[in-house]
Image (cartoon, rainbow, N blue to C red; front, side):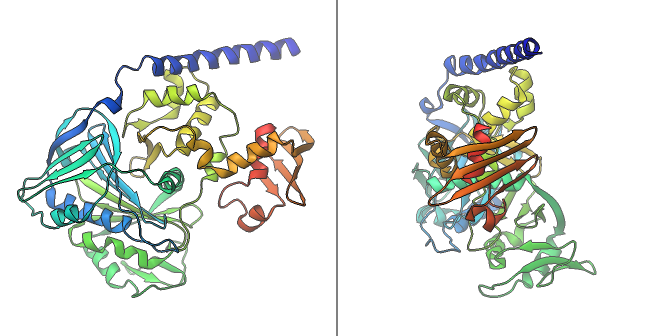
Length: 441
C-alpha cells in the first residue's frame, strides 16, 4: 500500500513540476515587457457624450466618502487590452466600487499593447468632460505613464500616480462578492426614473429594500422574499448623473443578501456600481481568498502565471490548468495568490473573471493580508498544537495573548473560540487561528 501511495505521489509531483516548469519558462522567455511600451491604446470614442458622463460618475465616486475617512482619492484605474477598455475605482471609504466596461464597439482605434495605469482626474479633466457634446470628436490615448483626452476645445493629460494600497485590497475583495451575486431585477428607463424619484432624502439610516409592487419598483423599509437590500441607501445618489441616458438598470444581490450591485446599460458600454453591506463598512472580505492560500508556493510560479496573462483577458483557471498541464489544486492556489494582489476582476454579465495587469509586487501577498502574515507567525512560533486529526476532522489548540483558542475543522464547518470568529461567524473571512491550522494540517 505504501509503495502504491509513493508511486502516486511521485507521479503527481512530476505532473505538477511539468506544468509549473512551463510557467517558469513562459516567464523567462517573455520577450515583450509592458514597461517598455509607452502607449497601450490610441483612438476615438464612438459615444463621446455617454462616455464622458460615465467618466464623470466615476470621478464622483472616487471623490466621495461615506465613512470616517475623508474624501482624498481621485485616481481611476484604466485597463487597456482584449479590444476593450475598463475604468474603475473606489470611494475613499472603500465602500463603493465603480467600473465602466467599454466594449469594442465603444472605441475606434488601435490597441498597441495591453496594460494598466492609474491616474488622477483633476479639475481640468472634469471641466473637459462636462463640456463634451454628443457629436463631438473625442480622442483617447492610454499609456504606461499617462492618459490623454483630446476634444475640439481642449487637450488634457493626466499623469500616472501611485495606486492606493487599500484599493488593491478592495480589488481583492470586491471580485469575490461580485462572483457570488445573481440578477434580481431588470428596470427599463421609465421604471428607473420612478424608482429614483422615491429615493429617501438625506443620509437615511436603517434598512432599505428595493421591492416590486403591482409592476412598480420602489424603496421600502420592509423586507420581502424577493426584495434587494441596499446598505446605505443614500449612496445610490452617485448614479443620478447618468439616469437620463441609461437604457436599463439591473440589480444584483449576493447569496447572503448583504451586498448588492447596480449595472447601468448603455448599449456599447456598461457601468457597474457595487455597494458594501453598510455605509460605514468598506469591502473587507479578503478572508475568502485566504481560504485557498494555505500552501507555500515558490514565487516563480506566480510570476510564471502572471506572464501568461494580459489586461482584460478572460481568466479561466480550468482551461489554464488543462492547457499548461497544472493540477487543479495548484492552479486554485496560484489563482488565490493573484487575487490577493488585486490582479483579478469579475465580469458580472459574462460570469467570468478577467485579468488586470497592475504593478506586480509579490510582497503584497503578505502586506495586504495581515491574517495570512499572522497565521504564518503562529506557525513559525510553534503556537499551534494539533490535538486530534482524522479524515476531514482536525482539532487544535492555538496560543493567543493570555489565552488558548480551540479550533475545530469538521469538513466544511470550521469554528474558533476567538473574538473575531465569535463576532463575525465567518462572514468577513476566516480568522488567523483557523487559517494557521489549515496551513499545517
